[in-house]
Image (cartoon, rainbow, N blue to C red; front, top):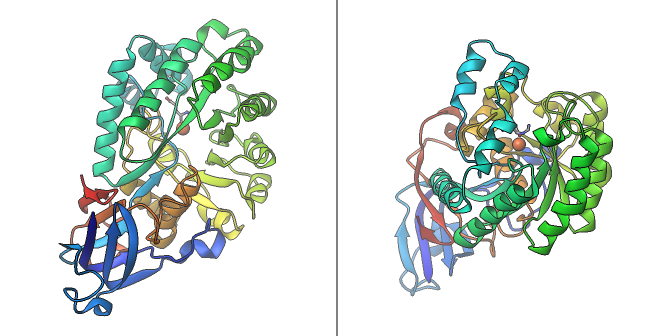
Length: 415
Ligand code: NIG
Ligand code: FE
């Protein structure tokens, strides 16, 4: 199928060569005004200014179907490189308890938190979880998400971790957008291993990982490296065990404490270290110039009323930054990447260009799809957002909470 999209007000993030962006490069957002975009079989073939193809009927594009963009702005879809999209039930009661002033510990004592989600996963079938995941995925695609990473971590025993990962594998087969799976067995200690942490780590290493590798259920290994959860030493052991099976680390680090998770991630060659609400100089220095991507999750900071991530300091330190939704029922019950981009500008003082790059190109790298998505580049997938009429690209993060997406195209087809 050949298609020529004409009459594009602005074509955003057009690049002939692509690389992971860091420091000053993050603020460069190439734009073509009055543009066209040619697609073939769902892949970007060509793009340029409309006046380069003034006589559409006679030229190169004579046998292309014409799609008139009617002055829409077009940008590559978001690459959401950190989510917990597979979960059994929402947790709005905890949300109300928190508003009433209950602490995290008090909520946990009432059976809340990650263990609450684990209990619900255990009582939900693979089929039910698939339906729930499929519906969430479809809703997020309408909001412009064109690639997504999904974690396990609410199973916390072999049967239920495998169940979650099998659901993600089915979602991969069903989904028109790329999905990557992360094994997060080390999300918290299950009740059965409350007083036997070593026993649970052994279970992860000796039972869960071999079974996951056997069924090829995961691309990445994740650990919640945090005081009261998994220590730096425990995180290192678990990540190294995952690496033995070819799983690259992507670590939950420095959310509540500057506990050394970021430095460990860099040392292990992690693809990304994610959260980063609590950064000290050593952690910032570790990411400076590193290939490990710092993935900021500002909606988790927003929802938990925590200080926002130090995006400016990290950019000044020449770190490669991505932003992601952390969609999960406990700390970020929204997977809306448009809001993630807005809040990154509003609260972390990222420039719109920086936030858009961090949510597309760098997000793509943070989930291993940098060569197929994240920019308007010949050979990449035609996963595109068509906006409603907007005065400029800066309007997108500025008008937070407005739905400015008119249509979404995935693999060259409107969904
Ligand atoms: O990334 N911080 C650890 N895990 C999740 C939240 C898990 C939950 O509360 O269900 C996060 O924020
Ligand atoms: Fe998370």
